[in-house]
Image (cartoon, rainbow, N blue to C red; front, side, top):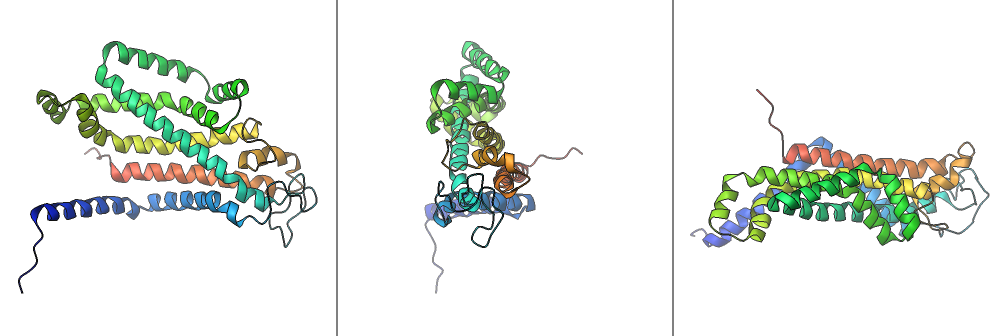
Length: 295
């Protein structure tokens, strides 16, 4: 029997799919990437599926204040007598969701502004750099607390404010990467052929700056998680009696000697999330876009 031959376009499409899958699997061979992905996935699963598995409601008082771990409460009770395990399972969704939304918003807005400024040049480029430098001069936590204290602490406002604090670094990175790519021959060829600016930005420049921007996204997730947790600890995040990992640290730090699990459990989860995301981003940056060693 003669072999079945695919049409040339189908074979090309199949080859493209194979290349994409191979590129997606290659980073998983790295031990650091697997470790970071494992930590990140575990914490995200706790945050997403935790409310389904929580035995009690966030404001349900079921034991003594600062009660020690018991058979029905393996992590003990908090300062009011609520089950620590239930509040831990219920408190991760807000932090993880807010962290991811703020970092992704900063990445999208920063990449768009930085690439546009680099392409436009001159006055617009200088104005963008000046605004970025002004925002960098303000401490991130002070800026977020000032905005939240004046305008309220709704989740969309917190996301937008945290994204603004992360925006300057992303803008400067996207601008620098775009300026480096703009000098390449294929970009110059696209200009000479008369391609519109939108096509050059999205088809020629964006694919070549995506990898470092995604690595930067991992760093922004770490910073965003720490910033949002600090806001909750200071009382400017989620309001009680809702559960939140940062808020739990603030509520129970006075009884740390009596019942340490009410503080240690959320702190460990926040630290694992930041460690996992940072490790994953660093590993992806090393495997997807490796830096050649000098000979």
